[in-house]
Amino acid sequence: MVLGQFSVAPDGSVTEVNKVKLSGRTNEVQVAWAGSGLLGVSTGDGSVRLWNLDSGDNYVLSLQGPSYRDQEYVTCLSYSENKKILCAGTNLGSVAMWKFEEHKPGEDEYSSDPEKDWKLQNPSVISGAVKQVSWGSTQNLLAVNTVRDVYILNEQRMVASYKDQVSVVQVSPTQLSVDVFSGGSHLELRAEIQVRGVHNSVDHLLLWNKKKMVVYEITSDATHLRVVASFPCEAESGVLHEGSIYSIEGQSIQVHSLQGTVKQTLNFTESEGEPIGLDVCGNFLVTATLQGIVKLWDLSRREAKPHTQGKQMSEAIKDFGEIISARCNCNGTRVSISIAQTSLLPDPKLYIWDIENDNVTYFNFASGRSEDDDVDGTAPPNSADSTSSKDGGLHDR
Image (cartoon, rainbow, N blue to C red; front, side, top):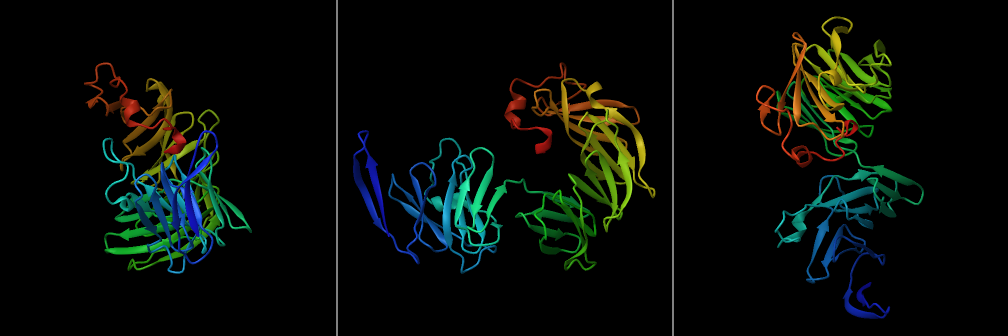
């Protein structure tokens, strides 16, 4: 239980710099770098001690939170320099992560109270004690070894939904925080699936993960959630409206009942391309396609009816690459569209399709001007680059 620090000379000779006696509940010491000159050490308890080799200072990161248990202890460590995340596996199957918050230019890399710079995240939970964790190279993947099984965890953006005074926010792969503001209720939901998408109405909650959809009902007193239905569904995205589920499945939009029965299919031609996003507002459903077409349906009747002919945005927008999102207003008269340019960088303009007049105008957020005031319709130099990420493609939105 002795940790030694050594200096290695160019000729291969080794000189001892420091030696520390460790104490812990087991003889298994876990050691991993956690930054430049920063060493993470765990000795079989529910904490990781970080040791700054340059200054000699050390401090402790603990598994203290509602998602962790008292008998839980660290069994392995791994650090991602790209993400600034220290990962720890535990004996109870939790994959804990501390994220180091970047400092602003000019600030010291480590503050006077450095342990506050590390933020403990909600864990991913698997079956079995974790024996080893290891980050992938550039693919945002984490391998978790439990001896019996090996899991590959893929980084997934958290999802959220807000509608009809109900807020749903994902806090872990299977856990969501639900607030019903009209009744002042707060609920915690642990789903039966790993959630990839969520949408809600005033009294229902829809979850999906490209393999299955699960529908929950919010009870009238907003005190708990109960499962209404669970059915196989390879949906990319979905929305709830008036007791129906509209989901993108391959080349079409399927209209399901809340129990999963298919009631109607909205098809797309090959020239229109696959649907890639859904939005519902009032009684209107809007979607965009891979070929840059925006289509709307009126949902006020028993079956969805086309509200207008589709609009080909590449004919109305210069330097058009692909649609990032399309949203309609509550009376189906206008649609807002954000796009990526041919370079796949997000366009700083928000486009508005006026359906009644069939024209497209825009507001340029880079220049702060509308179409009437924007003389050449272009953004200032580097404005798009400075406000967007290089991976700003459609499927990351």
